[in-house]
Length: 553
Image (tube, rainbow, N blue to C red; front, side, top):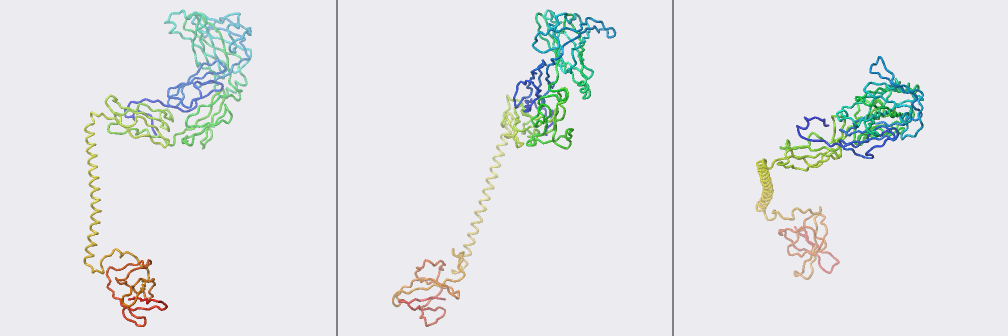
């Protein structure tokens, strides 16, 4: 969370270029320029031009995530009535009004006109509704029928205005007030001048006359007035006359007016229940969190609504929404020289209100150095807020190379010192491992030297043998003592006796997987099968052409 305050920025220089990706208000039957944009930049303006009634072009400006300026409304022409009576009174002395002229049952010609109107000077040829001085005047009009009057435009022509000295033009003021009903209050919303025919100046004065309450609106519907009163006073003592009167009304019916489309902010979504009249507004829950403390529309819910009421005004409330994963704006830069780092722009901020705002996805922040002619910016100039709530890139800072040479030397010394420590530690670890292996080898050698030949360590000592000792038989091939002893098929000794092969026996069996000892300490002797000897005996197998001798311990 970040609050707008100069204290938060430690006196740094910066400017904003804030973007607002929301829909501006879109009145019914209005033209918006520029239209169909998804993003409006800070300071950008949009203009509204009404399609029907001759309302002035309205503009609104994007400032800190909100549209400022008058909320525009467009209306339709009143075409079913004309001016019937007109009266002019000098009210410079309010207690003693002086009648200047009065026309009753005015005959308005049906001459065509660009816009529908209730009066134009060329439609009433009998006389001109004109005054010639700076006095205060009251103009009273009555129309051919009653009508609710929401919009009023009055046009006056100041004759020979362009011939006046410039200092009189610069100080020119024309005051106009309007009254159309006891239930309505009229406000001047626009006044501008333009050249009119030869040497004339046309002053257009636009009024919006809203009802003062909902009850007043109902009374005006039941009993609309058929009159209008205005008061004027000019600062210039030159002739001026009324040249046109235009009246406008709401779109739709009096009971069900049409407002258009409401303004929607980037954090919200809208859904219409009745198009142009009734809308549901909520927070975009995928990226924003609902934080409203009250909801007059639907209490204890996150749903708000806007409805079009009398005089085409929106009534209701908007939900308050804050981003779920904003990027922090409190520590956007660090470094020993961070006071020389400045923020040159912030683009795409989301404003929660006038003083509280957030960096959201795609918000970008641009950095620079306070003294660009001498300082160097370390790191990327631009960082972007990611959807994870983190800034892209790494922290940045500025430094002066001329002032930082000593600082650089210390950095180099620190790096070399750390590298030396790492080398020493690695050497110590390797020496420790080598010493341990060497010690183990020396220990085994000393142990083998103190043992007898039969106890010395042999590489085969770690081999496991079958649970029963292998019993070997040997075949003697040949006659007498010159016969060759060969290795016969093995079988197991039921007494688990261990048979040691003599050194002069040739191993021929591929199934012999047990070890042979280094020395042959055991003595073997050959015997007949009928003689038993100790410790070794021999057995002769029958049914064989050769004698088979068996050796056992």
